Image (cartoon, rainbow, N blue to C red; front, top):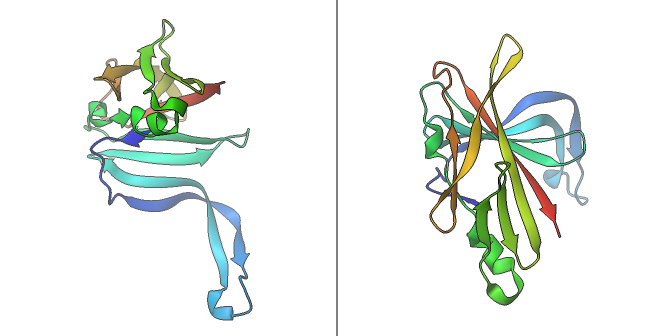
Length: 169
């Protein structure tokens, strides 16, 4: 999966500082040691698309997840993923994977190694610590491309697009 047309120089920053610090004592030379390193719950790539951030974080199951955070007034249609780029290289026999949208809204990617499934994205807006669901789905863009389509929402508030990936060999 590769971001299409994304800002390769997006600013990277930690978000939601965690308690405690990490120390790395590598080798015998103190010049190589790193102490009092701050830990964060999330890593934010700011401005991967105009007004869109990409946020990585761990979930309770120890899995890495990511969200696209669309700022007020920004366009979620700017987000584009090229799915086949790495999967085609990884597939035995070099056959490119096929993409389809399942009846339940999941994006299904069939590869030689099995089926990869992006579950229908969870799309929402938060207001006063309450999540308000917004209907959204994956859409195909050409042979290898995927984007997101979102129903009507309040453009004056941030929009979160939370895709989820599953693998079934």
